[in-house]
Length: 136
Image 1 (tube, rainbow, N blue to C red):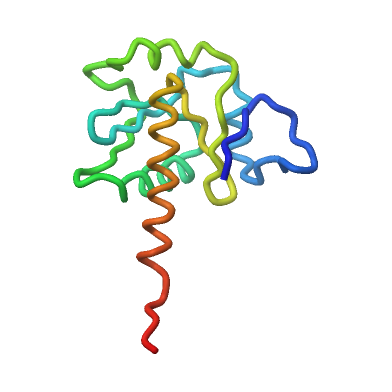
Image 2 (image 1 turned 45 degrees about the vertical axis):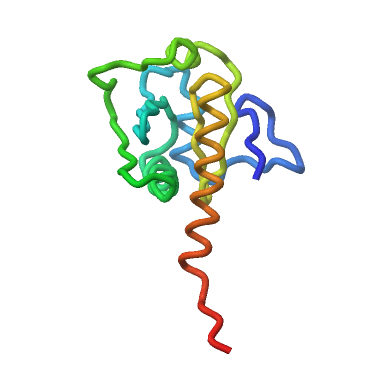
């Protein structure tokens, strides 16, 4: 699963996001409507429909001993990373496929990479947890 740039035009290799609610959010020019993923010491702005944001949060939650929370408002302490504070102003952000929708991570390249890695690790953890036990 390789993230794709949400601003790219879909082609034969990259079908559009099936979720109408996600598409509406991605096509909106209002980046101030971002939610905030809080996991360990990271505060990451993310955009997507409520269902796929919650799924993204749950999968990332498999990678922490604490909790992964999602805020629909700016956190009281703000965003500590200067790059992440400025990232929503950029026009290129990867789309992380989440089930039949997606999430756009509005973070600096370092934190974006960390969150994508956590999401991929969380997916693998979930797969291992839910796979049937081999009793033979």
